[in-house]
Image: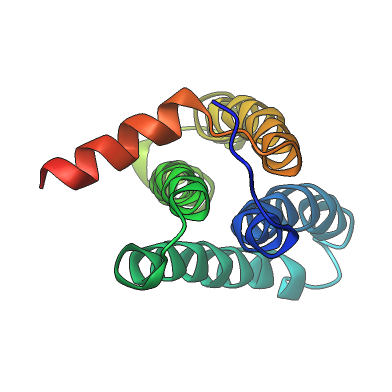
Length: 167
């Protein structure tokens, strides 16, 4: 659905999508690759990644919650609700797969697994689903940001807004 929107509304609607894209691409792709390459030298990038990601995802969620009461534009509110829903989904996935991966890598031997088995399970069960969902979310967020620029509201965002009105 297309709306007549101002540049200020487009900017406010795009802001949370931009934060999510930064988190997905910079934090989870570039810093992850950096952390893997520096794994033997330092654990700092590996520890920095979840801290930065959780901070950014929390900011998106909190900003969208405050937009429910403070935002007058339906266009901006719908995009904020959509970004918050995706941030919550990603945060849940990040915590579950991150915990599973850490558990398998750190305590795999305690469960009677060899080092190779725990690494394979950590990568295949812990990280592979995470990376697939990350790829899908990057595509969805690029699409949402493009729809912001063209003044469109995705149908899923309108559904979130309608559900909010019913409450």
